[in-house]
Amino acid sequence: MDAVRTGLQVLLVISGLFLTLLILMHKGKGGGVSDMFGGGLSTSMSSSSVAERNLTRITIVIAAVWTPAIVGIGLIDRFN
Image (cartoon, rainbow, N blue to C red; front, top):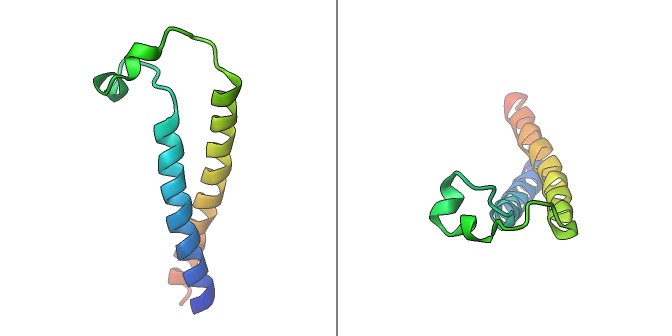
């Protein structure tokens, strides 16, 4: 079980860092903290580009990897 737990922890750290990077790459929608850092300056185009849609899809896939890693670690802790 230690190998599975270690593998899940490594997966959790890598996917968590990658997920944070992907979320920060998203375009700001305005009215929030993103305006403070200059995100509101580039909101001239309101339509979503292909790159933004692909970024959203990749973010969802990485989140779908991150969530089971958390649940798996929790289950291992619970039943050990």
